[in-house]
Length: 485
Image 1: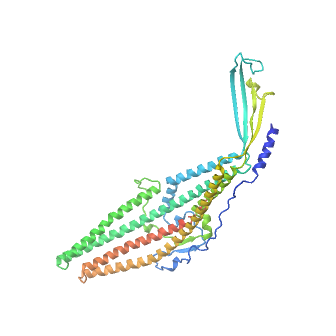
Image 2: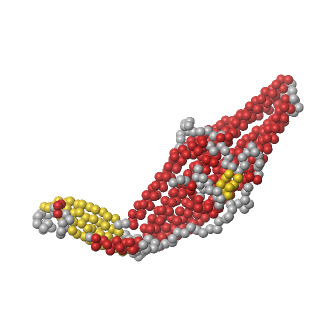
C-alpha cells in the first residue's frame, strides 16, 4: 500500500510549499515623532523644596514589569499581586486566550490528512427469492468489514494558511488584550490605593479643623461671657463648626466606597477585613521616572499591539476571501480495508479492497457573493488600519498628557505648599490676636476657612502627583515585556 500513498504525499508536500494568495501582512509605515512634547518637560527644574520629593525623568530607561514597586509599599505590592491572581476579569481574559490558542492548534490540523478507521460486523439473511452474495450461496451469513477512510485537502492557494494566520492574529490580539487588562488592573488598584490615601489625608485634615474650630468656639463663648463677643459671633462660629462637621460624613462615605472598590478589584467581598489600608505617608513618590523612546512606544503598548494584531487578522481575512474564489482540491482514499465472512479471515489474501478518488471544485456563479465578501474583507482591513493609526495617536497623546500633568503637578504643589504654610501662619497670628481682643471673630473665621481649604487642596495636589505618575507608567505600557518567563 505504500506505493499508493507515496504520490499523494509527494504531491501534498509540493502543493503546501506554494504561495498563499492575498496580501502578506506588513506593519503600516508611519513617521513617529522624536519627542512626546513640543517642549521637553523638566520636572526637577520647578521645586527645590526639601520637604517634597523631586522627580526626574530618566530618558531611554526601560520600565520594570512590576512598576508599582517603585512606590515602596509592601501593602500595595501584596494587594496588586492578589488582584492579578483573583480578579474575575483577568481570569476571564486568560480563559479566552487559552480558547483562541486551541482554535489555532485545531486549524493547523487541516495541514495533515484525516484518517478514520471503522469496523462493521453484520449478520444478514437473504430472501430465498434472491440470490445470495455469499460465495457459498448461504442465505444467512456473517460479514466483517474493517476499513480506513483517508482524505486530504492540499492547501494549493493557501486558504488554510491564511485561516491559521487569521486565528493566530486573533490569538495575538487576546494575548495583548490580556496584557492590557493586567496593566489596567494594576493601575486601577494603585489609583484606588492613592485615592484612599488622599481621602484619609483629607479626613485627617478635616478632623483637625473641627478640633480647631471647637477650641475657637470655646474661646468665643468665654469672650461672650465677659462681654467681649456678641451672640452673632458665637452663632457664626457655631455655624462654621457645623459646616465642617457636616463634611466629615461625606468624606467617610467616599472612603467606605473606595474601600469597597479596592476589595472588588482584588476579587474580595466587601466584608473582607484583611485588605490593607493606605495613607499618603505609606507611599513613596518615585523620584526617578523611566521614559522610553517614542520609537519604542508602538512596540510596547499592549493596546497598540492588539490593534496591530487585529489589522493582521483583517489582512489574512482578505487572503481567505480571495482563496475561496479559487479551485478547491480534495484527494483521498475513500476506502481501503478488508471484508470477510469470518473474523479470522480479515486481511487475508483476496479480502482487500480500496478506492482512490480526487475532486476539484471551482465556483462558477454565485450571484457575486464571493466577490462582495472579498470587497467586504478589504473594507474591514482598511477600517482596521485606520483604527490602528488612531490607537497610535491616542498612545502618544496619553504619554504627552501624563508628562504635562506631572509638570503641572510640580508647579501646583509648590503653590499649594506656600498657600497652606501662609494660611497656617496667618491663622496662628489671628488666633493669638483674637485671644487678646485685637481682632474680631469674623476676621479669624475667614482666615480659618482659608486655612481649611489650603490644607485640603495640598492633600489633593500631593495625591495628584502619585496618580499622574501611575498614569505615565500606564501610558508607556507598564513594562510587561520585561516579565520573567
